[in-house]
Amino acid sequence: MNIIVQKFGGTSVGTKELREKVARKVIDTKKTGKYPVVVVSAIGRNGAPYATDTLINFANAAFKEYDSRELDMIMACGEMISTVILSNTIKSMGYKGIALTGYQAGIITDERYGDAEVLKVDPSNILDLLRQDYIPVVTGFQGATEKGDITTLGRGGSDTSAAILGEALKASVVEIYTDVDGVMTADPRLVAEAKVIDHIGYDEIYQMAEDGAKVVHPRAVAIAKRGSIPLKVKNTLSDAPGTIIHHKGTCNNKYSKNVSKEDILTAIAHKNNINQVSVYFEDSVELNELLMNELTNNQISIDLINFFIDKKVFTIESKDIEKVEKILKKNGFHYHIIRDCSKITAIGNAMRGIPGVMAKIVKSLSKENIRILQTSDSHNTISCLVSDRDTQKAVNALHKEFNLSK
Ligand code: ADP
Ligand code: ASP
Ligand code: MG
Image (cartoon, rainbow, N blue to C red; front, side, top):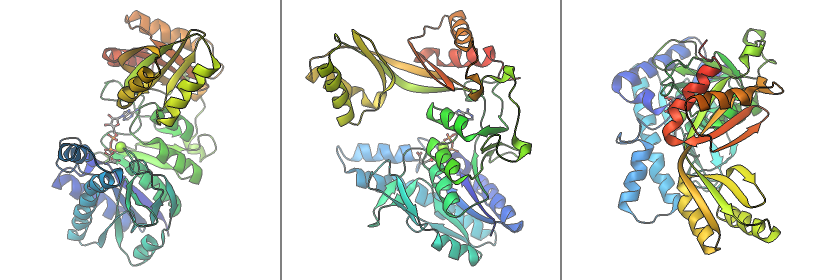
């Protein structure tokens, strides 16, 4: 059975016309003799009546405090609505669409509401339905605990649903349909010259996704890599070939490419809502331990970590500012926070061992009068923290400096 998982993002199903287009795509796949399994997100973006953000805002307005288990039930409604509407669109075109919740699709998670981890997938229900010629339409972003309580898989988690089903069903490919032509050299909303990357390795796209390129969720990439399932990112609205994500170099030769010296970088990613925290104290084992334990116990994730003798510098996401300030004040730490920063990351597996990459980055940002607040690097990334207002300028400057639109 050649199974193809086709995931459609929220903007892909926003209108009746779009849903008909999506249904036709799925039916066309079915007509080729393959077995499509559809995953769909909540309709639209913030402001649209059943978009996830709208549902969260609704909950926030209705209650001062609520249980995360119940917030998951509210958030999951958006995807429930989309699956029913899309499966009925498929039915109206003469094919056997059927809507399934995460639980009915066999996706079992732990109880970390809001960011649950998939523990196992039982694909038997979907496989039975496929044998009976159904086209299953599964809620993205959703699983359930062993007890049957609804859980959600973290923001952007419909990609994860698609990848986890792809793995469990041994799909030949997982197609992620969205509102851009594929994975691009930068977010096209910021860089007009951004170019589609026709193929990319799991590790590079994972890094891009971790560093803010939300075109595909990093968890989905990790799952696809684990199952060696190719991911394709395509535009719902065009027939552009899109991007294929695979084990670069070990896959079919037609997808492999020799990296030349000019191709040091693959893409520039950016992440907003970052805040730089500096905590001042003379080095001490006890104070280091106190600070780190407090952050860990409060589930605060820190990034861009630089420890100096007289200060400790790290970044946090905006959602954690209040919690961090409370911790620092409670423990009498002297600190300073620079708010509203962006982390700009240059990504490229081929940069390892190539001298002068950092020099080029510094030169191009300085030329634009952009202050670099902090840097960090790994074998395939160099990140610079800049002020939020410089984000677009910085991404464009690096994109141009490394000739990524060529
Ligand atoms: P969906 O609702 O389909 O899941 P998302 O909003 O999660 O869509 O992801 C698609 C968006 O990702 C695009 O509209 C684009 O602005 C953004 N994006 C950020 N970085 C990139 C990139 N490098 N390539 C393509 N799109 C990107
Ligand atoms: N609707 C969910 C969200 O907005 C999941 C997704 O879109 O992938 O996060
Ligand atoms: Mg998404």
